[in-house]
Length: 392
Ligand code: KG4
Ligand code: ZN
Image 1 (cartoon, rainbow, N blue to C red):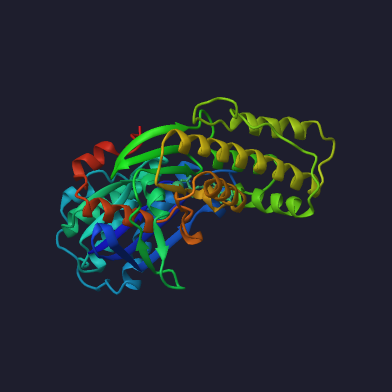
Image 2: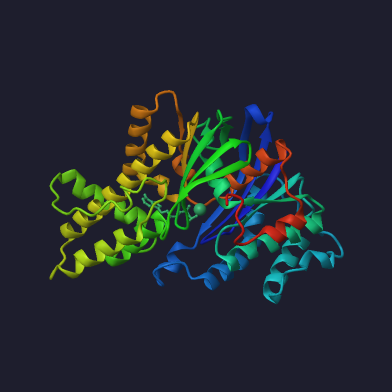
């Protein structure tokens, strides 16, 4: 099966072509083509993602990235496209420039040998999401290829199940985890514990009451004068302080004593703000101490709540995924806790090439759904897109 996957929920435009083999229990995925464009540098000027800029960039880049991914996969055949392109293809495309871009792309090639189109249906920034969905629908209608909508956070969860089989990281085993599977999803928009008792049957165990942990990393970065996206920068500063081993700065562990699996990060960010306000001058090494103290607090509450979530909900597998799962200190602490407290629990985290937003994870989730006959129809896709969650 060949899948064309599209991800545009935030500030990465991702298009991937996957070839999948095997059954749901022992599937293998080969990335035939992968075109990922990060808009982060453009948004850095605004200190965060600017939704209309994201939409414009997705609109401008999707046709070229799709061509590139198909070419890399050897599936791009120059030709005259389909004449005429059905009007239904542009049902939701209002922007004339976007329509022109899609049209000239569709006219540039023959319908490719793709079996399924997968697209992120949400959650994410609405203008960004709809760009990808409308683009995917246009391709699906014109080429008469079935389409499936994938929840972005489900994509992140599946990213942890992709285990590289070659040094180039183009071939992956799609691990078949023992259920129930607990997932800790940590990104710029979400921080949540989700339990999968059966395939695609999710139970919401806990989540942040305010900011997502990635959002807190980004906000603290801004307070420290570090560039967006701040997560990796804060981690870098924290590592320098940790390496020196002396730091008197300590921040609170929000909601540590509360016996739910919910979390909170906005108080932590405020604590950083107050600390900075009290300092007349802030040196590089002060910044490093603050970054480390913040990272330690975030790490500790995530670890503590994960231990609670796993104790209250006996699990056979534990997935940690989302952009923040790139954080080494958080990985280390969660791994140590899982090995110490839950021997026998299988722990999965994404390969470093798949922690951030990408289309590979969306295609892989689509494959699992298609294999397990859980694909959604296009009508559902459109209706369910945007803010509606499958995890709630
Ligand atoms: O999953 P993701 O790429 O996009 C969303 O779905 O939100 O996550 C992005 C978030 C950002 O907040 C970014 O700062 C954070 O992940 N992040 C990190 C690290 N790398 C990315 N946070 C902490 N440490 C990192 N190394
Ligand atoms: Zn994400």
